[in-house]
Image (cartoon, rainbow over all chains, first blue to last red; front, side, top):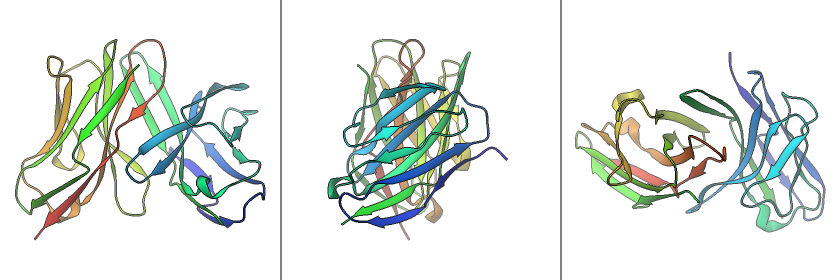
Amino acid sequence: EAQVTQNPRYLITVTGKKLTVTCSQNMNHEYMSWYRQDPGLGLRQIYYSMNVEVTDKGDVPEGYKVSRKEKRNFPLILESPSPNQTSLYFCASRYRGSGTDTQYFGPGTRLTVL
Amino acid sequence: AQSVTQLGSHVSVSEGALVLLRCNYSSSVPPYLFWYVQYPNQGLQLLLKYTSAATLVKGINGFEAEFKKSETSFHLTKPSAHMSDAAEYFCAVSQLQGAQKLVFGQGTRLTINP
């Protein structure tokens, strides 16, 4: 079954304690993204990756890092989390070909930073 | 730059009534357009997409949307609302060429009244 998995699904942490949210896809897609969802703001792209070792900033990259060492994995790293990073995070994997564009979302990670 | 505007952050309809969720986009090049649905405490699910084929697109759960280039719109409709349609709906746009970025609207929360 084609899927995107994220872990953990829920996380409560404290300011400044480094954390990593993992993301994995089994569809061999080259393009992956991280989004955050906040009420009234929709989904905003944090970082994206167009292939292994190729990453770039999205709209709200401050306070986040990513890496893409393997095609299937795209972890999101918060080196020093702050309360304004409390949000719902989605990883997505995307296939884009001639005449088609399909994005698959993970189930989400709800992060609370105290 | 591309952008998406969803008119109305909250829409309320009676069960059995027409559902109309509005989406307008701006894009300097031909777009791909998407509608996603998010049920409470769940991730995003693709409802339907327009990728430059037929302008009237049919999706899952009886929803459809029409791409109107002259109005730069991609409104989502369903003839008869069901209680299970209560959810948040997101319109999104990407471009056929160039940047691969997917830009989301702010979301519309649909409530169904019995």
